[in-house]
Structures are given as C-alpha cells and as structure tokens.
Length: 117
Image 1 (cartoon, rainbow, N blue to C red):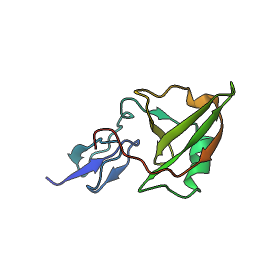
Image 2 (image 1 turned 60 degrees about the vertical axis):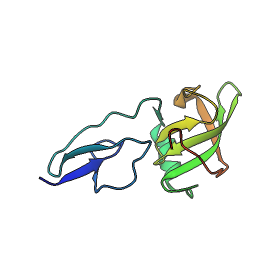
Image 3 (image 1 turned 180 degrees about the vertical axis):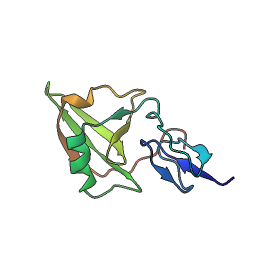
C-alpha cells in the first residue's frame, strides 16, 4: 500500500515532501482525513489568508511580518505558514494574540529558523 503525506491543512493529501511546521502523517493514498492544526499554531481568519495568498513568500510556503492588533499592540516577527497558520512568533513559546484581533499585517520577509530545525 503506497502512503502519501498529509500536512497541517484540512483534507489535503500531497506526495511526500518537506513537512510544514514539522508535522508528517502517513496515510493510505485513497484515504480522506481531517488533520487538526499543529500544536502551538493558530489559524488566520479567511480574509487574511486570502490576502496573504496573493503576496510573495519569504521562503518555501511561509511569510514573515509584523502584526498590528486592535488594541494597538504590534507583535513583531510572526511566521505564517501556507498563508493560513500562524506558526511561530520569534522569542515566544506560544502565539500571544488572537488572530481575530489582527487589523494589519506588514510583511517584512525576515528569514526564519524554525524551532527544532
């Protein structure tokens, strides 16, 4: 039985390649699965995902930038994976904000060194 790799997106089966956020799951090629978001990530609202999908990538399938929040805070060095997941915030163990509070994303394209890599 040939296996394919499912990355951290809903029901999206892809051939094996580099994992997104370090998540790899082997499943039969004909299986449909619903994989939860990786731990310590948060999903962006659809409007931000759509906008980011039309912007240049910083590296393979990720973008980096600063996020302006509704309360006026600016969170710097945010890594966004696949235009839909907040993967990491530099220097933070968790994502220190709710994606629903984002009012602006300023892409900076600073290169990223992922945790555990």
